[in-house]
Length: 138
Image (tube, rainbow, N blue to C red):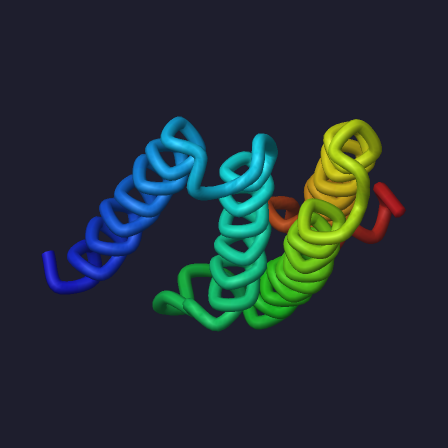
């Protein structure tokens, strides 16, 4: 529960901020697209934060050293890819026109996710095979 509580508090703060921004927009305190932009910037920064922390959470060793090294490399590639995508997402929503930011941010985050998944599949495809079979498959 101790590890879950900060995430719950962060999610609650995110929802409160989004609701507050939407209310401020409805009463005219902020511009028409400001609430959407602010929420999308928060989403990008949250993606960057979680992607930055993910490769650093290493559990107990359950496989060979080679397999663990490949998995950690895949985590690092995914972490870098998604961290940069989250920062770019936030930057697009902060500064680019809304119509462009919608499309560009989706393409950027989707491409980053594809890179992370693709590298993980490539790096880990022979992890379960014995060393002799893995050599034959390459």
